[in-house]
Length: 312
Image (tube, rainbow, N blue to C red; front, side, top):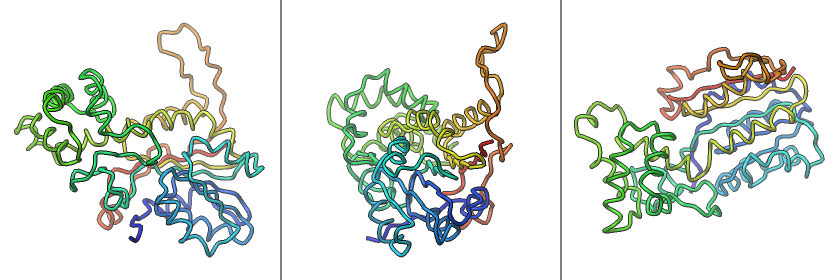
């Protein structure tokens, strides 16, 4: 089955990366490889694109799609948090640009069969890497009510987190919750009808997002990657983060500001002890957003936020 995905904010990202022939760039989340292919066109004939994805389907698609670029491409079926190890394998110390698109691909939603969406009745999996141990069903059927509430509230910013957790606990004492549509039904049953009518999106949207984040440890991975990312860039190198969730965007924004030299100490500290020094120039004072035309053509782009920084 053909891999379906449209790269978000492609023109803006290619412009910000300032791709140059002969340079080395990393696409941390290949997806449909649209960003990677556009980067390759800019860095030929001697540049190198390192593509990473933890979803084997994305790697398979990229292997076929990027085959014409031959030795200019190296692909890795890995989580992007392992980029330092990948560069070590390639005997590369630093790169000239990094892009991380933190959203789901259309293919994962439509064709993966892993229950990322409540539109289809699929096994409640939500693993981006199917070799990972914990599935969404494991969490839903085994975690405590308090832990479920925390996941829905903290990762999904779900107002009705407690009632939804209570409903899940009540249901699973009678039957295991195994599919995406089963979960969506019980979430809808837990949220008052009036509250559902006030929402622009499906009532289960936030719960599904929260579970996906929990299953794939997305926020922890992002934080850990940012611990290394700046050291992996050459001076003048740029990093682009495309997020689709306020929590991810907040993490990137906060880290960019700390790299810019702003004090990160708690406000009640009598004096600064973080000793932050300016190491980047932030190129997006406000998060970049897709144009109305792009959102019209690709509704999945509607919540995208782009942040870019250049290493000094």
